[in-house]
Structures are given as C-alpha cells and as structure tokens.
Image (cartoon, rainbow, N blue to C red; front, side, top):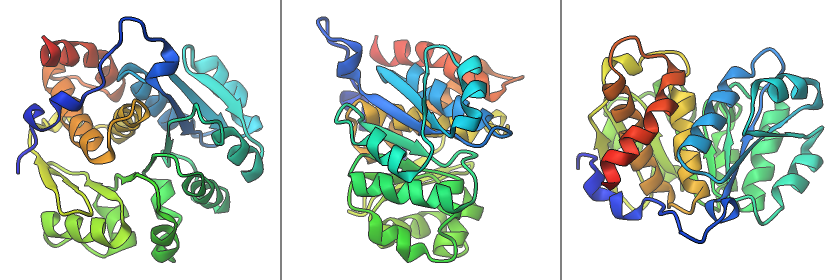
Length: 271
C-alpha cells in the first residue's frame, strides 16, 4: 500500500484550546559527544517543530555547553552515566525518546538504549543506537517490549537483519523478528509493523539525499510519538511530511530547511 495522508491524517495530534505544552508530550533526544552534536540538535529541532510540547537533549556534561549555546527552545539535561539517564527518563512526563543520531558507537550508547527499553517508553532507535548491536542483534530484539520504531538505512539494516534483497519483504521480516516497527529508509521508504501492516512512501524528492536528512526524519517521528501517536502511524506521517517538506522547498535544500517547512505542510493537511 502506498503511503498517503488518508492513512493517518485522522490520527495526527490535535491541539486543544485549553491545553498546555505538557499535554503535547516531552521528547528526550540522546546527545552525542562534543565533536558530534549536530545530528542530535537537528533531531531535537524537528521533534519540537512537529509539535512536541517540550524537547530536551540528554548529553554528557562534557558536551553540555555546546548544546546549551546552540539550542534555544530545546532544553539540555546533563547525564553522566546510565543511572542518571535512567533516573531522567523515569519521569512519567517523558513520553518518547529518540536515540542514535551521532550518539557514538560505544558501550555507553548501548547501555542507554537498554535502559530506555527497560523504562517502557516509546522509543525511536536510529543510526548508532542500531549499529552498537551489530555483534549481537538478539540482545536488542529481546529487550524490545514497549512501542519501538527502528529507522535504519540499508547499511544499518544489514548489520542487524542481513543484506536487503527485497525491500518490502525484508522490512516485514525485520519487524516480525524484532517486534518493532521498521522504517527502512531509501528512495522508496518502506514502513512495516510486526502485525504485517506495510506501507511504501513514494513522495520523496532527490533533494532529500543530503546530510542530516535522516536525523530530521527521526525527530519528526519521535515528536509525533511524544504526542501519543502510535509508532506505525507516526512513522508513516513523518515519512510523508518529511518528503513533502522537501518537495515544497525545492532545489537548494539542506536538512535545516525541513523543519522550517513543516508549518506549511501541516497547514495544507489540516485546512
């Protein structure tokens, strides 16, 4: 089935006239080391722009000042170790987590991902949060109990599930193996759920082949999940909105432009 707003528009979060930012969810983005902060900052901005009421970057104290000086509406939360991270995300007001963009391929990232999965929060795992499990994918799959969205490109997919030969059938196999929704990125992005739902997103223009585009997609999906959207629907909506934002912007697109186009896309969808 092709992805279109008909599949998920009725499930997009709706603002309440008497609501507050706390009603719109709080998304935590895991920040990377001091030399690699851009990806998490892009994801955080995307989550905020798509409607999450609050967004925070959880980062090592050594990189806190980089994030704090580069971010404005996005908050920063220093977390020294796994215990501090687990304490942060135990707050019931935390409603989703985005983990992986330039987080680092190391034991710290793996420990934080496992802590997030133990907390039972809706999680989006991308990039380094997937690659850290390449030597033992079953460790990740066995830990998945809560709503989880995996967003690999083909290389990351291969590290966990084997080489891609048929994008649709492979994504569906991966979803059933892992117990998570799988969004396999590419020219035609495939979104598959463990219950056999399968959607192909075909509206992406070639301008999306630019650095940071995937980080923005992660933030869009994580921000929708923060607002209570189910992982499969959030993945479908985020993929379509991400591509439509790029299409409307046109030539010269860089990833930062995607979040700035979201208000225009949302206006067109809801009016």
